[in-house]
Image (tube, rainbow over all chains, first blue to last red; front, side):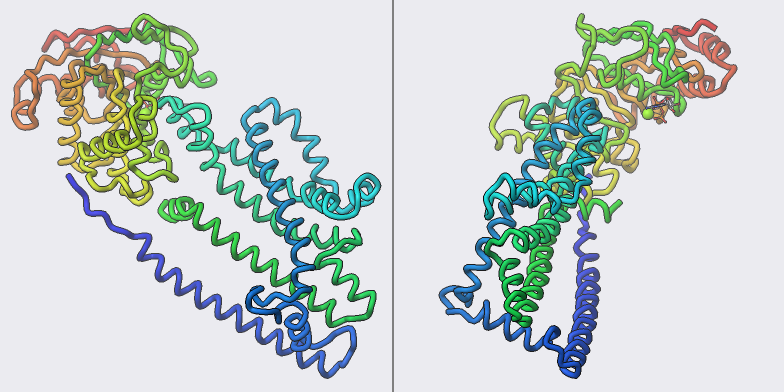
Length: 280
Length: 275
Ligand SMILES: Nc1ncnc2c1ncn2[C@@H]1O[C@H](COP(=O)(O)OP(=O)(O)OP(=O)(O)O)[C@@H](O)[C@H]1O
Ligand SMILES: [Mg+2]
């Protein structure tokens, strides 16, 4: 009666990895062409507003990444710009994530609560978060509280709404199984409801992370604060166009990096989800 | 003692069970057969307290069932969906055991033992979706057995396994039933199986759904796959059940199906519907 276990997913994995690698190369190739065209075009045009990418990269390097080895090659400037930006970004994102999941669980669990709370939530979500900045400027000091509040308010919605949705769409049979086998309370929450809702929660967190980066920059652009966004606006005021572009490119790189890291964490945490779906 | 009295259930205006009554003494293994859609799963769900019936009562050991009773385990018909894909097979089996007390190591050992008993030795570290349908079904059975319930509900528990494994699992259920004295309701589509494992076979009918007949199975115990199935009594009973199920499947036949078997044997019969 003992079966031989065949590991089909692993075999499929190799072909999958090769195909992914190839498509990665194809994407990089296209990127290289674009950069080359950009370089040629900006060099021939010679406009001060559009420095060539080679110059932007050199500026980026000099400004931020030419520091000493014992500071991970980060310059003094990098530390003064990155620290407040990243601190606000991740504080806001983490607070919004926790609040979104906790509130989402509570609202998703109780149908009536959902019916009452959802319409106002949809209204609040529809307010473009940057419009709150004038109000926040009136009540909060410029700096971290203002920026974090803006980020939290802007990015909590995808997490909250996805958590509500995830909690509500837990498989009925899985809940019945929990009931039959006496899995209740915290164990039910952590072993059945949260894992089942996790794919949707992660999707919400991923969208939120993108929003958080955007709001971080916006709050720095208007908030007269420190950080990468403030550096960009300062550079523009002093006609340092190459420095401004360096900041823009840096934000693009950060966005890609966050996405990549998040993707890896998600794939690790939700391995069962992808694999279970492929096997159906 | 499980007492089902005048159980009626309908989904919307579609009545599935009508005034169904059944009494199961402690330690009995009752096989339930009947055509597809006649309400077998609905009956089990009412007993498990997962749905509250429109009418009638289900009483377990003197207490009316209202919510899932303690010491009850279910092997769901949709076994695959009832396993949690984010837990390993072993953790799926061990998760309900928390309630039974014991250390984590003890619970894991109990889970591994149950897995071995259904022929899944060494599969504990796998995930449900890495297993075949038949193996997943056995995980669901192992989970229910490891739980050591006093009332076990099994909804077509051997539907996806091969013939040899099926016989092994039938014997496993009989052995556990004998050793632990639990009460078992087992739904099956296999008429031979219903007679082979059952102390009693209950035949359900459709439109309106209800019990068409109950047959006592007086075959010597312990049963044996070869000799029991060759026993003339076994052959007679299986023919009986087969005829009743065919009758229950047709629309107009219930009275005929109920009347006929009396000539050949003396099964305990009740015609529960008032037509
Ligand atoms: N949740 C539900 N909502 C509406 N109708 C339902 C529901 N569950 C079952 N039914 C209907 O009730 C009837 C009996 O269903 P049930 O699942 O109890 O049948 P069954 O005897 O277990 O059938 P099978 O042998 O195919 O598993 C069927 O006609 C089915 O369509
Ligand atoms: Mg069924």
